[in-house]
Amino acid sequence: MEHEIICSDFLKADLGNRKYRSCVTSPPYYGMRTYGDDKDEVGKGQTLEEYLETMVEVCRKVRDHLTDDGTLWLNVGDSYNGSGGVAWRLALALQADGWILRSEIIWNKSKAYPQPEAYIKRPVPKHETIFMLSKNPDYHYNANNLFTVWDMTPANNGHEAPFPLDLPTKCVLASSDVGDWVLDPFAGSGTTAVACELLERNSTMVELYPESCAKIDARLKEIPSTDRLEWV
Image (cartoon, rainbow, N blue to C red; front, side):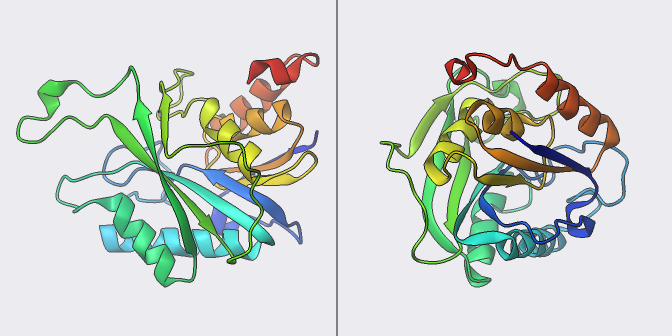
């Protein structure tokens, strides 16, 4: 499989003329953490309105590079600390920009979640949201008996906010075929690329921070060349 790693702000990245069957990504969580000191990091120093505007622009660029039957799978961490629910505000903004919202998926964090002591006057969050959006009404989908609640434990690979391998695996299987290209504009630790390699898809990973790009490259090289599908 071919895996392209572009170390850049996604809005400045040159994707050429390549078209992607699917995009699977988890953008920076607004108001919850930062990942480095680059001024171009999405959400860094932005108001919520600016964050939403940037994310709409990012997803618009994604849409331009999707195949006509392509889909976007967006894992959004929510925040209610003065921001009024980021996940659904983003989903509504994307709908207003022309995306078709096909499904809301709940990632139930079956083991790891924040300490209750940090949430004195509201329930402790134990889930995140994954939105499935399509470019057009007629889109590619492999019927694989997915439900709208996914029980998964967050990964622990040294990145600030890694998602488990099972998350992109489910998305990639549902929205692409062997040999297709998959995009992740916020590649992080490269979990989407790992899923693509195991499932015989090609990928383009765009990541702002050079140290993360190096880790993605190293991680891909560590995958055994045999029995790949047994990993998932």
